[in-house]
Amino acid sequence: MDAKRRDEEARRFVVLTLLKMFYIFPIYFWLLLYCLLNMTVVIDVSESYTSLGKLELGLESIGAPGNIMSV
Image (tube, rainbow, N blue to C red; front, side, top):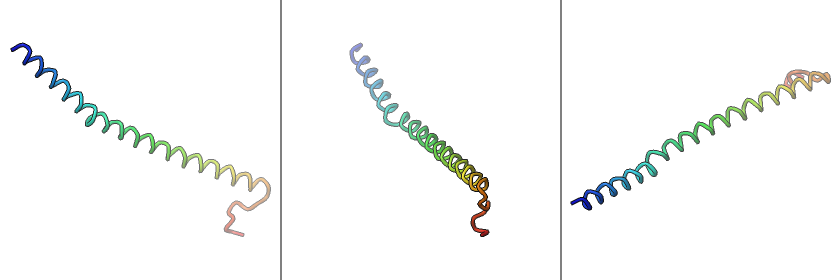
């Protein structure tokens, strides 16, 4: 009787562990990965804006027009 209960508890533990490993944790993993990728995209866009701003400032300092299309 005691061995049967121990087998049942061990089986329940294994099933719950597998469920956590393959169902619950991957959802959080993909959600975290998605958030990190979004932050990377935002950082990349802001860096490209600042480098573009520096480029425009550099062009104006050597006498080029601020808007190239208005030549």
